[in-house]
Length: 336
Image (tube, rainbow, N blue to C red; front, top):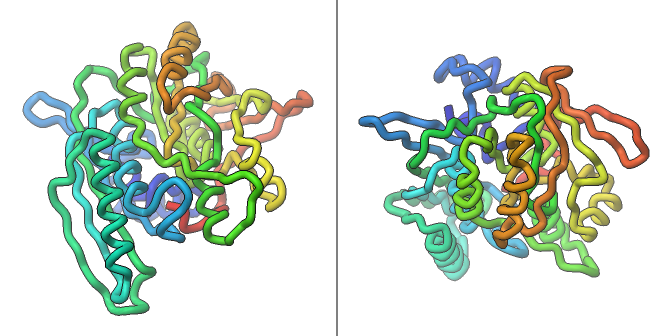
């Protein structure tokens, strides 16, 4: 089942969301167990496997360094399909626009959506538009759905992590969330921080050349790397150990997090992925990722263990260990 349908937003994460899922939404709508909930649903039709996903975007502010709600909506849906190993093909887009929203800004968002779709080699083929009275929405909300095709026999899912596997992140952590926060709060920074919002299907295509060595792919959106890895550990019933010294951060992002008391492990990305891969192929996969523009800063940040199923631990630079838990609530609301 497509977990975005039931997480009330793109990769929303958090203990409260999971309680809502487990106690109400999933039992009512489908009954699909948590281990089978992923970034998109995989459907079999006439012997071919299709991936299908849907997501809603309510980012504030609508425009932020490195993108806007339109590019975010297209790239987010493309990435959810790519995380299943699918080649994205077609998107739909539904717009809820508040009365009085700038026609010029709307035109700019639509142009950006088209540009993002062209970059990802997908087509926006259908959609809907509703205008609501002033004060009944917050400027503009966008919902996108997407369909892709799986052109291989690989099973890539959140329950695929195995003891011994290595954990790779494709680049610096937390860029999107801090870029949106800085724009929202008007923070004056010495170094500009831009969202990493980007389509990951090209990077995934390169990675899939490694075949069955790819066990899990996830994009660490709302809830960040920490929440995403916790979800994987629970789905796969494994432990995961992260090495603090290996985590890649933009120094400016790390600095803002330190000033504001934020843990960057819980800050969202919108153009990075986490990969859980076979240990004997990890270095080769890492090298392949680093050859791609969106994976140039990729790093192996940890490994999967057979101990303490569902537990994620961080091995600190001083040699200690601390548990990494699911994000309770939202550290940064309205970032996607």
